[in-house]
Image (cartoon, rainbow, N blue to C red; front, side):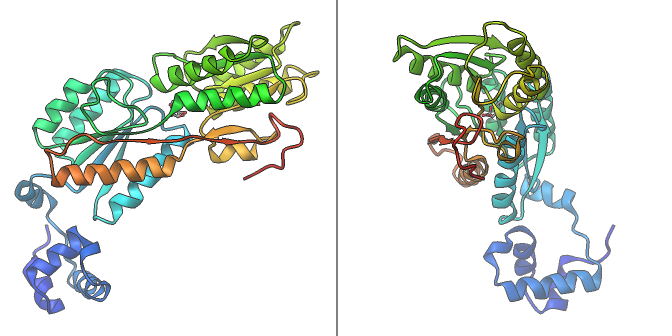
Length: 340
Ligand code: RIB
């Protein structure tokens, strides 16, 4: 335990104890030169803050819990990065939890963040957790939903209009002359996936000559996409387009079509579009068309709303909905100039 106190640091730096506390807890509020002066004093004296004592006094740790559905999915690491960038400006840190699309793991992380007295929680929910989040909020830990709104909209949320995104993806395939479309995605218990399928159905409904088949998956993974792609390649009567519920699934489908379906050409025989526009999409062997979600902005905005709710716990729930964006690359349009 450090024997050096905050008071010693203040004297050494020639500032007040309150300034030292601000440098440690709200660095954005202190002049950069003063921050540097205090940091030099902390290093010179070897001061180590006593977080447990501060937590008892302040009632919260300097952490924000973030629970995502699948930490392997670059979409969520981009969301985490956006949240972390905003959190860092307040001297807060993000603790990332992976529910792995398992409701029991999701609840275990919420228990952990309560025990940690987290500043707040950001969560992309898999289960119905409104009662659990309400209990957290009653104990002074607000929550903001990421990428999905709660059924009763009682918690603030930052989402993307996935119905519009699904409709956009299929309208693009239809505009490219495709008429036998397969939606590959699941489980449909994930609201984001169900909304994308609903959007796809809305687009197909506008065209009598277009059909839509659904291949339901157990998970939104490359492996699940690969299995679906192999089943499509093995068919004698194949679809002429695939809409994958996210880019990981699309990468799996692409790999299977290229390997199993030796006579299959993408996009000439089968056009393929994904969702999220993760970095790997543009780097795929056939650059992947996708529906872009502003993942970093989603994380940044969710953290911003959380900070407001920490300051004003009784504020009304806010719902920010971003619009998705179509990114056309060679997997749907052979003439596309591959955008990054
Ligand atoms: O995790 C499921 C999907 O929902 C992710 O790929 C991302 O698109 C999120 O919106």
